[in-house]
Image 1 (tube, rainbow, N blue to C red):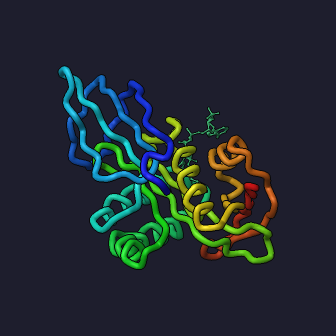
Image 2: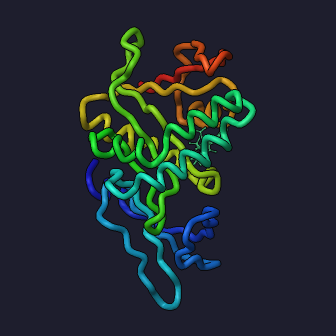
Length: 217
Ligand SMILES: CC(C)(COP(=O)(O)OP(=O)(O)OC[C@H]1O[C@@H](n2cnc3c(N)ncnc32)[C@H](O)[C@@H]1OP(=O)(O)O)[C@@H](O)C(=O)NCCC(=O)NCCS
């Protein structure tokens, strides 16, 4: 990805803070300066009594692991409660603690985060397509936003950032898997232009769940 590859946009908003996080200058009205693409350390800037919050999509770095684990935990509970059997869901979340994410960052996995005023609101991981029988080059493995960051256009931005990076590494076509019962994800990928190209099943403990693959050409 190139720095500021999509330029900057300004908008008014009041994105709520995540429970359990240190509140950082959470004004009722703020100006968010959004920079999508690789960027350096974001800094909120005080201007005329208002707080400008820099929002970036950047590569994950050492020190992000605990916050990514928090996002993973909140997003998975929100998306998969009642979809993935409860005990299995707890096991999957427990396995993806800060240590797991730290190891992923250290080994250089492709992982970008949505950095909102130095607090992480979502992430996307991606790489080479893992199903060679499907004619797609890249794959977005995971795309998750904490619940309070959903529905604001950040999912689209994270997906675009992942696609752009994949494309810059020669992976121009992309595959994404989603559980068939995850209506929000299905609606989102359809809206982004994905076409269902494969249906399959996945085992969770003793139970099977349907999943679908969206292809993006
Ligand atoms: C799925 C997810 C990544 C989408 O991100 P988001 O920030 O909520 O979505 P955006 O606001 O960027 O939406 C982008 C577009 O898709 C549309 N869209 C989003 N969800 C939709 C839905 N369920 N049905 C139809 N359209 C939808 C939006 O209206 C928007 O359209 P527009 O740009 O033309 O106005 C996010 O909601 C999320 O993290 N959900 C929980 C975890 C999850 O299910 N992840 C995917 C696992 S495979």
